[in-house]
Length: 286
Image (cartoon, rainbow, N blue to C red; front, side, top):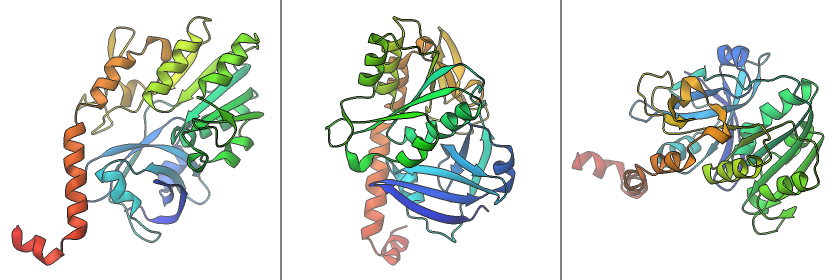
């Protein structure tokens, strides 16, 4: 079982794990992900591979604690193991020399756009980075993104750091100044990716987004990750996760992501109750 070798708190509720997995570290390419299962009774959930070190045989995963399973993983400490880390999965992001590209990350999406930005820079592109978060304390991996870009713009919703506003603001300003943009890569919350698509659509700038819908097996068999792209049903795990932003039905995607919201709330409540109840009492009740 993969062992955790390092852990770091990047921001409130966001943690970085370095995990031993030589096979994935050797084969992983930018944009690919893994399916994680913390323990035998846990659910499977996808995490983008934020970094890899083939020599050390490690991969880096960034986890935002938003539900039962991610909170369980967030409790893990160095030296502990994770039951399953399966991958690399998904199609790698197409890396080539586009010219001048903009790489955008929102929230924990910054960890996911980082390897793409770095690979595009190494491929000879001029890379402009735009990253954002709600507040300054939620901005993650700024140092890494500066190393992976030629210019980095940081935005915060409340204006506590960098540009006051959404990540679409500096992108819109670049377009209004008629700056050359050959391709936009964007990873973040669905509303953010939809907003970026609406900014680039009128001017015809090719835009790629990485989708992270509900997933179970990650191999295309269950169909849980289906999305509509260009009017056709696609599976994000095997056909993606990268898609043409101007073809994605974001409204449908948001509805599907909210489908199990009540069940997720109940699961979190059980997790918190479990923390408060003595284990012996839980066994006695079972």
